[in-house]
Amino acid sequence: MSAEKTRSGFIAILGAPNAGKSTLLNTLLETKLAIVTPKAQTTRAAVRGICMAGNAQLIFIDTPGIFAPDARFEKAMVASAWSGAADADRIIVLVDAARGSLGENTKNIINTLKEQGRKAILVLNKADVAKKENLFTFAAELNESGIFTHTFMISAQTGDGVEDVKKFLAETTPEGPWFYPEDQLTDISERLLASEITREKLFMALDQELPYSLTVETEAFEEQKNGSIKINQVIFVQRESQKSIVLGKNGAQVKKVGQAAREELSRLWGTPVHLFLFVKVRDRWKDNPEIYSYLGLEYKH
Image (cartoon, rainbow, N blue to C red; front, side, top):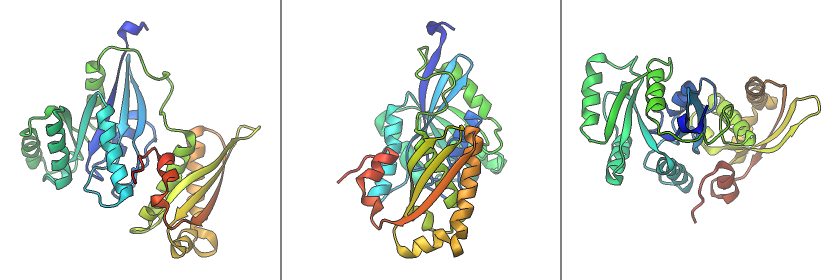
């Protein structure tokens, strides 16, 4: 295929926490890349997913949910989202249509884009469970902002309408050379991807606020001679009491998490994975510049 006929572009997916951004990315890519949990603010750093659609290479940037942050770490997450938008050729604003009303976080996103003079594509998610009589009224209300060029109604969960979004983007993305090899799925490291998969399993296994108080770092990633992969990871928590919860009685909880993460990583890479998890207390890990660097976040003093 000649370079003149190829198309490529960066598309940022913005939205309030729990709008379904990571689910949409996974559905667009037809594979699991971004971690997904029912809890808000699961995504911490921008993840790039590379999607081939005919002669077009679409690079989607899954960003952390945008909200009004207080602490340094949360501020860095939101800054990462806006940085992803600044780097993008086009922006998708993903809105949870099932809410039926415009939340403050979504209002702030629209107002900020308006102030920046940016146009965006409106994608109403969860249209399958939204009240149909409210859907078009809600879409019209959102379009009054004047920033949206096109509107789509989808279900990221079931995939309904997602192909229409992909087709539209592929057909309207400017001509240009591809930025990545045709078979590359993402630009994040295997170490970080492995950490994120384990963190997802911890989010699913642990209740309430504890998942927000921990992070996972891959300390060793070694390909063995037999083709298998050995991974050592550290789960950092902020207090000794949290360490006990993550470990569980006789280590049962962390063992269950490790098994779930190992099975998913083995499926992802098509080879056996030997995963070893260690739990350590680092009370101020959210103030550690090394953690920010590992996650690709900017540390501000």
